[in-house]
Length: 358
Length: 191
Image (tube, rainbow over all chains, first blue to last red; front, top):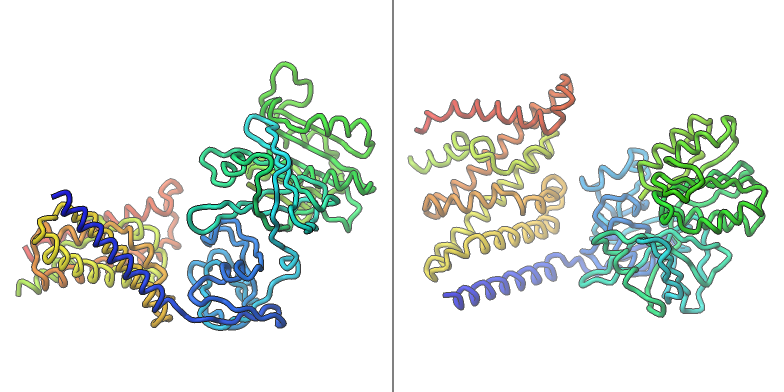
């Protein structure tokens, strides 16, 4: 009886699998299509697959943080011809202005015919790199500092605050996870990321399992969270926990280029052991007159002599009310929201606040 | 005559959504707008009819002769998933307009308990093939009727202010309850 059931269920599954493969090959096959990019380049695409996947296969890297599920909205591009009408799954992610301009979510849009689309200049700088791990040090109980050297002759050109997407090898299609770079952009041959281990996290688990000498692939740089250099305002940096990474990149860049602007660094963490790189900033604080460093712990032990409490209340006390500044925030959403309202009360408008929530 | 009664009962008196409270997730979440609700309803009707018919054939031509009825759940679920997948591919390819209006909901239906419920009921009540087709089609239409009515009622919610705690799903569940009471009134019609 058991044997019969096994034979039956196996052959049933086999038939179903063949049927589905057949349908996918025959009916879901729209043949080769041509994508015209920015009116000058033409690439071949596989019909029946999403536009995002096709662009990835042709080495055009479009930001995407959710793995093509239509929930992050990063992968939108202007599709000027051949896109058809907007799918209900795109509706939520596109504003009415974007719909008028012809924006589409490339992870939802299936290529069925020739398409004309526009890829912004900054995305064309995004490249794929092969890297080798040269540093993998635990800096707290769950955060690891990972240095990745570019294996090839390549160089990575980025702005302080931007992020890379690390390729996470899987059984099926590869996954990508985003990590901010903590290194100074002057170093073009090596980047640093800070990775906090998330229980059951696909990306952090993978990166924590690697050791010095292992290779990994990534692409970048991505993101519009980076230091604006066309102003002379004070730079207000706020970091929560592992959100320090892009802030550190901004700080290193600021120090390296002697930017003639005051930098306020607010750095919040839970316990003393969670405040990594604190010594570096404290030492820098002694030397640089223009750096104002405020570390704060919410649950300190007896040895802590600095500020106690959440970072937004520390900031509320420390920042003068008439500050002419612009702010860069990176940390958990609840911190970003609290800090934003403090900043607005100090006269820093929301258009001068940039943030990275995670 | 009994076939007609069966169809009528499945649409109205033993409405799958309002008498059995099956398929509640989409019933609550996708009933905000009438046109979207109708799209979902049509998709459910189509999938229900096709899967119940296919499952009847599999049950009576394969599982029963082989004495493997205990594999029912497994086989039914796989059949449903396959049919939904194929339907989506075919509609996307040949009927793009239909795909836009309801094809997009098809993947959501795979896990809809009303679909599996109909296949299990038809075995439980030992329906014949024609009866199964009518019963599943009728149940689909009944579900469509219920969700479109709910869509219409919820549209009017913009004019009222339900208590904050009732929120959107809360007030929808209460409306569904009142609608179900209304449907009880049909009970005597077909006995």
